Amino acid sequence: MKRAIVIVIDSMGIGAMPDCKEYGDIPECNTLCNVAKSVNGLHAPNFYKLGLGNLADVQGIAKNPTPIAQYGIMKEKSKGKDTTTGHWEMMGLILDKPFKVYPKGFPAELIEKFVKETNCGGILANYPASGTKVIEDFHEEHAKTKFPIIYTSADSVFQIAADVDVIPLDTLYKYCEIARSILTDEYNVSRVIARPYHLVDGKPVRIGAKRRDYSVEPFTDSTCDIIIKNNGSVLGIGKIEDIFVGKGISHAIHTGGNTEGLEITLKAIKNELPLNNLKTTKYNIDKYDKQFIFTNLVDTDMLYGHRNDFRGYAKAIEEIDTYLPKIIAAMTEDDLLIITADHGCDPTVPGTDHTREQVPLIIYSKNIKGGMLPEINTFSYISDRILDWFNI
Image 1 (cartoon, rainbow, N blue to C red):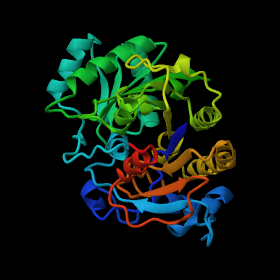
Image 2 (cartoon, rainbow, N blue to C red):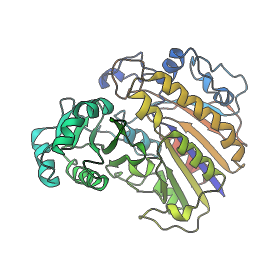
Image 3 (cartoon, helix red, strand yellow):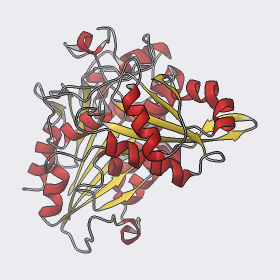
């Protein structure tokens, strides 16, 4: 059975797009290279073998004259620099119109509608903010009023934070579902994100495993749908199911962080996952002759990029590197591995938001010769490679 495996290292961009200034970013943004430079070099011997160092001056990852993988850089064709836009384009969906952003917070009439439909009584914050900072700033008032904390960023997101001991998790999810139903058409928000947290030693700490993303539904069939319609299965690991609202995802498992995501991906490649327990509500596939394993590793973005933590970012890349030999060893000649990113989030430049960057692309199979790929002007190159691999 042929399989394709895509691992998205969330936000690991590799240099500013030519139009980066239109998105409020500086030409110097380069997540991978700047992180590597800031820690005086990455220790990533397996990324070296794959040829990642051939793409740019990545300190610690030298140029490799005989890489075992194909390597290249992809430019984003869609308008945007967010998770949904990046992942959708990888699966063949290109956005001509960007999602709306709210640099001054959400309009009063929108908030009034949200408060009325959720019956939450009121909200706190309502401005662009770092998630950890806004929770720290508003936790005491949140505990007193029981009002949810609403915030956004430079990206198209409506984020709702709540202490699960103040607002139960099910209620928080319900608030997000209501917000999702409101934030269409004129508001055109890409994602509503549930940000649950609890107190640990008196300090608010986010619960990553209980985060949920509520995206708009893809406007047409993606590569994921095409695979399912051609007798395949699609396993989404991490927030993949949320990004596609379950559309084209036959099996799914959410993760609490990169380590869990890597372990689950490895188990999937080894055929050690109980897939019957991971079926989604939209599909009930028992038999298939091809499989697509689609993983998002979110820590690089959520924990380190947005928090300007270049040291943590570097360690996350190095952890991923340690899993590569295990993943490659578990692959058969019928497996295709693709490693890439969805946008940038350079922790070394001013600001805490995503950066409009091109992304690295690594493609490995036991029967594909390594070498440099030609210029790639769209993330949907990944879609083309997958469909070609499956002969669809």
